[in-house]
Image: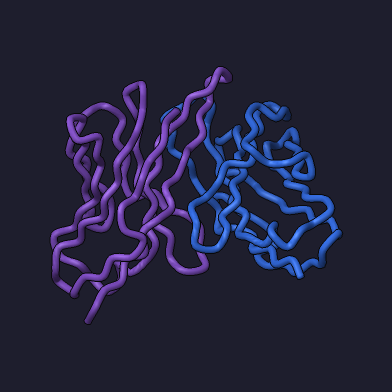
Length: 116
Length: 114
């Protein structure tokens, strides 16, 4: 079965500091991996996705993630945190079905707080 | 280009009642998935509709049912509401032929069961 685990339910960083949100995956097949962001009282917005092309994936708002097969990781980073980055972040893995269309399995989320 | 739209945005029900939530997918999308997000947790897959049929289902009881219409819009119905059904219900759309795994989410319907 495919799954993701997010390490750290809460992360606090100072404005201007490095953001690092951790995600490890478990998959018996090459995975498609995603990071979504959720601002308060809103739905989910895609930040970036890994679909077996380049291992370093760049997304919106200055975020990027690196797929490391040897470590089964897909950590999300941003060099310099901004106050507007405060939100909940979810890592997800694609699950293929016999039907052929996919669904996503999400991690439990990491709440990012930015300290002024 | 309108994204995924959901209605209502908020609603309050009492235990035992029934609720219907609605979703219109992003233009060009033909597949609708529903997710339940309890407070402080990640979204959990409920079911997925394509060509007006339920194609996949997560670990949810039969009290949760759905429908997809010819225009690809969808409804989620929950019967005999329990306190534990209080959550944000997210609709996501995608294109079957696209199959990139990328889902586009609506802003959700927040259901409170008293």
